[in-house]
Length: 249
Image 1 (cartoon, rainbow, N blue to C red):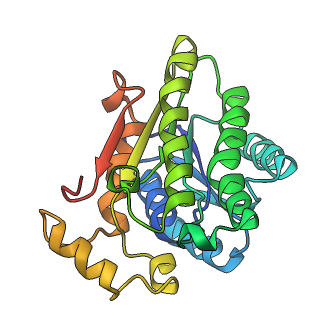
Image 2: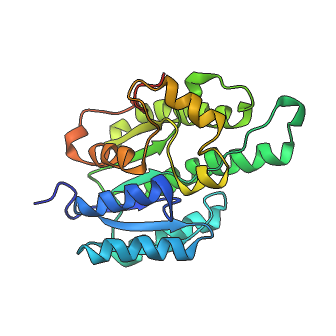
């Protein structure tokens, strides 16, 4: 029996990148997966098709995690389709870099609305949807909280909030047998980092030089850690911040 057999997982922002990798690995471990996406239906459908081609079960559900009505619909459709929710991966996130001189309130709200408010709203809906056996919430943070990188003040603030939320909710939800942990990746090669021009940039080369394992990450470096946190293998872990970065601190 696969370690996530008979489990249902919701993965936000799963149409590409780290989220897509996690969705596929959860399915390979036996979970039924809800592939959430905000705008890329094509990407989400591709992830679902890949899962199904390997004998897994998945559906794609559109929804912006910053919109409470969308979050409610995401979990309502999940329960309608599969009758339960056992795992939530809060992966949806955005980033943009700039100096404090370029600080913009609209960009602040964009990042906080998705990275923090969206995570809280999805977590709230998951807690209401989990059964009497509890569940696992897996947040996706970032090693940027340790790097104090110039030009990252908004993004670093959002991911610092994710760490704080992880620790608080682990204590708040522990009595309900709901575990809350965070994966903090280092720099990962995804569609997003390519689009942002980070791959091949000075930042890319600098991160590679300072990474003990000598390269940036790939989504399949992160996904197995999510499977571990979703499974009973990590049943005695909650409130943990797992840095998955090739050694970057």
